[in-house]
Image (cartoon, rainbow, N blue to C red; front, side, top):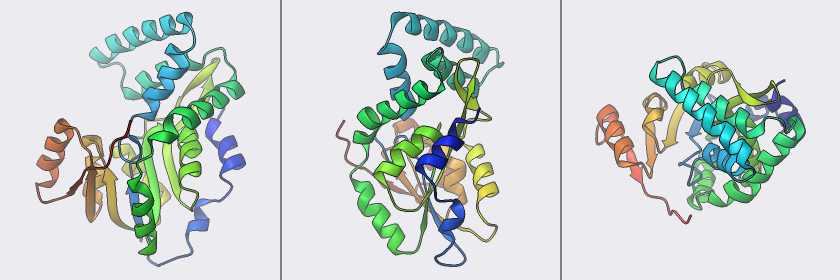
Length: 248
């Protein structure tokens, strides 16, 4: 069962077509989420709170699945999609669909929303004043992205994330993890052909394809490893480096 559709219908009634009422051709600004608009990784926070903050049995199950997937990863029989699905399934198995979604929404409200970078408000205001349309595109689950972003950024926007489904008693990813080239694939399917990809914001080297696709690139608080990789791919003058205030 698609867990994103029911949540979108209830909490995010506007459609992407509602965004097509400003400048033409449409101009877009893209934001990664984890590490870019919030200070930490929302998936890790959700897994931590649902698994290790609840019961020893659930922690044991997650540890076993983690070890199995790691072996499969080494053997190249599993990737990030399977890894994230296994952890998410272990975190929600037996809870039921409604309770699982309720708990995730609660974790987002209590532990993820406070991590919003304070610089985002001014950044979004400036971009929108210039006629750019905002797109959030992330590997995190689209369900909890909407819970986060509809609260922190109530203006019109597009949200693209990894899809979730209810499978064998727990939540898993539905389809590929929305990361790297997969982001470009999904955006190309969603946006009009005449779209202008003006600017991208990211903290991570996995977003090099997205950064390369845009005219302007803003790199936010990268790790040394990501900074080196992005510099190698874009050139030292191919992006603007910014340091936003980390409070948590």
